[in-house]
Length: 633
Picture 1 (cartoon, rainbow, N blue to C red):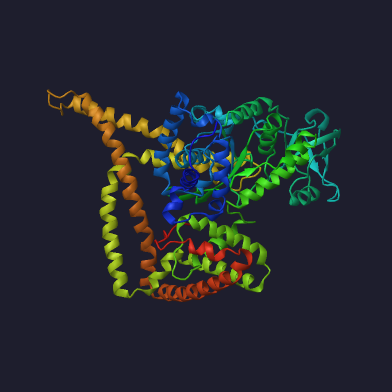
Picture 2: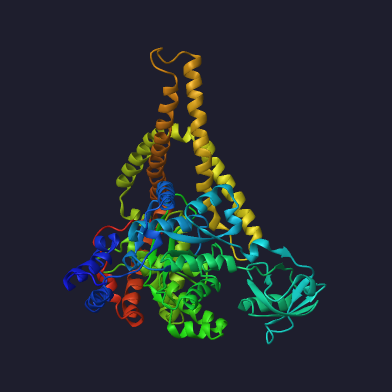
């Protein structure tokens, strides 16, 4: 039944629904939707604004539990991260079945809660994330996962066992043929078994077992894996194929109820600068749901988890949402007709392209460092780049670099920027501190004395909290490093396992902080009772209550004061460098180098930018005049 509303009212409704807080703040009202409002308004009038039922927006007891858990953890995340900003949240549909695909998965247990929080705050929707069954067996992680309606999924790599013998390949011409020495393929492998190589060489699924020492793969390993296996036999791990029918049943049921599903299609967390190959599961979910219910309007929303130093305390994050994708009808038809592998492969390519539009990836770490340095050196005329556009600038610089990396100007700039980074490291300073070279000696002395005195004053303010909660600081550091070492040993894709550090820092702090608060509170209560420090008219248990209120306040004050103090402490090094004659000369030369390099980078980007992105100038016009945070990367 059509609703009695006017076309103007529907258009107004659409406009308001599509604007997120960050877009209003920065004036980024995106034209791509505005152009469609007239046509969509007419369509909605004809169909009566019927978006369908969405179970995740209903008021239920479990919904209340979900909101409380997300809110509680958000308080902790706001302490750990200095800033968490959404971008493009207006694109999230407010109704109907959605699959949120997020990447890169570079912050283990933190990522899903971060995304759930933004989706709940910005779009009013709750999502059920797919969580590793092994993780849900953990006491704390499992409890939180169940409270936020996570769906357990068994992963082959969690059940991996060392294989017998060694693997090798005969030649690159036959990358699907895997051979072994002393192996027992007929006993340990079967079609669907996952073969995993060490040293981040990837994994591949078995198509057919020929003999104990030969098998055929469904898909070859990474490009460099063939060289690795040809040059020397390697040990390996194998994991049996897992029946995921129950997991898919829960996913399809959730989507048919108009709910939201969240998934990290890379299959696990990692700390690599590029995306891992996407697993087929996300495509099977979308296509399988449409096969069962062709009338279901499933949308896929790409989400970019963009962190600046994800493992570090008080770092920043930008969660970017891309335009929702509809599954092409021809792929659904291909899937239902029997060519499931072909349909899944094509949909995965579409999803990967969508993820690349909301993430910053690079072929290696060094290239990423050069790109980030070039973005800091880039100076648009009379504009500052806000944090919400920093990720977009980084992404476009990566695309531009990939296209013009053989251009002599780009080769020269890469070498110059890399050399500039080395000089910064040699002097022990960061980019924005180069400007200290413009200060005279008296100015440097005044700043050094003032900041030193301020640091001492702040140190006294943070000292009580630092002493009281030193056990937590020490424990989080040691345990997170230990867990990172364990994760690195068990993984075939991690580089240094930095993706698990923040998660364990937060979990250890969440576990130890309440215990430490209670210990100090009970100790204070005992001391007050033992030494009769409380007047008789007042009950001694008030000491416990007051302590449990005051102690968190002391810890919070110590964190904030310590944050300011650390920023001041980091600024002392370049000031002392300016007082040293030799280093001062080096710093002055580096400032000149930076100025010239900034001019070259800006000229090249302004020249090549419009060739890669026709709307390049439009992006720059979205920049506001508000000051950019100096240490956003």
